[in-house]
Image (cartoon, rainbow, N blue to C red; front, side, top):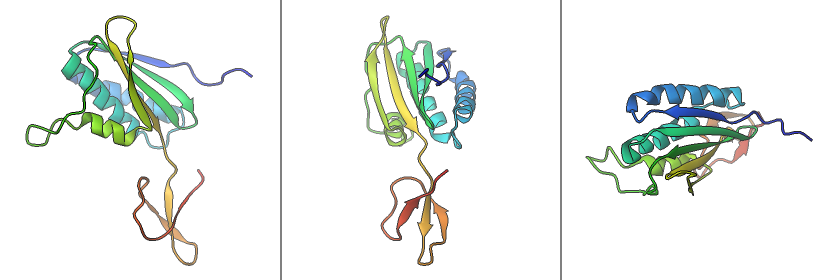
Length: 160
């Protein structure tokens, strides 16, 4: 059976923080075209990975988006620095140093691959989770958050 997934999307990104808005817009539109109802997690993850490439590697980067499933994609950001990313304690009045923690929280998984040329590729797989519904005694409910449900009323997945 032929592979029906769309071809990967590649974006060349200048080593300039002003390019983040354009990258985020293209990635969000691609996510929606590939079936994501909400592209927020994907947009945040790509923003953090590209920001790290710009700030820490100081080189242009290549963003590659690959659809892995119905609402699942891999975001890969290749840059010209061989040093692996390092999760650090927040600094500058707690306003910086959260990037990899955010990626770790929003991504299903993430990691680093050696680059073809000198450099590396930092990747993250993001999957839109099913929305959860708070179910009360008579089976009716209201929408609630999507991750790490609090203890209390039973949560059930709602089919899209």
